[in-house]
Image (cartoon, rainbow, N blue to C red; front, side):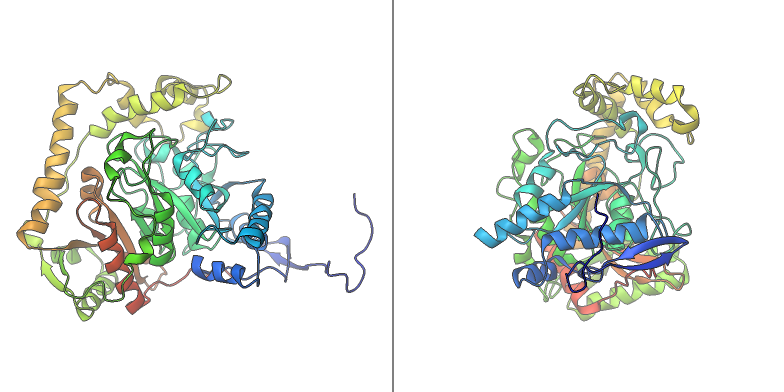
Length: 508
């Protein structure tokens, strides 16, 4: 225990004490300003010796203390990596001796709590049933982040079981972590789901960037709601191994960042063929290790873009005006906008995920350590029943429906539904409209293409287009055929650089 005083001029200056929401906090003036800082900027600062990875980690931890656990109490960070500072120090030494590994060297990143990390952090999908579960090995995503030199700063809170537990559960709620709040309107605005913690944390600059996962809108939704760029990649571009699953057909991880360039940097670090995930085997020849090469200020010039203009009528006047301004910006940047309303692919309901969840989650749970109380979907359901006050606040209707299936994917209804999903989302969906109108991509107000992109397994990227008077972020989403991430990034980058529509949240 240290009982002495700091000598004047020693450099160990006592931090300023300030009050926030009735809580006394210490602010270290020596910490770098990381608010809204991009990956490239942080990397350049470290390369010039102006700061270090260790200081970046401390700066983000300071913001977590001030804004996530005090102040507005966003509740987006479920736990912090206890070794984060040591990892950062090791990476600083490596930089001094060998130079940086690449653009993510020393950059603090948060990952969603359903992504396995072989360290001192749990992987629980937000459920108390897995509150004591430690992964026995890194997910492919965590492995690639470490190889790139990123610092996994912590695990982000999320909608429990990726919002596949029940109907009516609020976005961002979990039994283990509680409710995530939207930094643009804490307690007032929807935070989006289920990668809500990553969305809120990145929007509030509690980390340089984040990783979310998506089955049906769980990257696009919180990115849109939190004023972020989110990429839902082509299924198979990023490995699914070591991620608590929902669907072997639709699951994917993806970047959540404050700008398109950061999303491109992060995407390149995560791609690659994984022997544990057959979906990645088909990505050979399609994935890239550097997606920043496709960022082009003229990326919209000469492009033909389809927009369902009748969607404007589904928006309130203020959001419709923002979308209209975005449409005009696309035209000013050289794109031809085509109204696809007459052939707009319609949404549809499907229970295919209900069938796919049981075999997927049973396979994951069966491999957990013996001391974990659940090793199958059936046991999770029973665990919840034994703790109804904590676990069944919103029920578990989706779990019960999934448990009622065979778990073998042999039901005729499932086979018919999955074939229908493929047909309606591809042959009669994205492929059809792109072909008929000779388009490069589709652009939807908000996240209107979520079902199409999810069911088809095709990529989508959401880009902020401003905020309303009540500070609600608004976005557009671009989608196209499989492996079209370079095209979508080029267009999104050109749009972002010319408009600068994104507005950061006001936390102080």
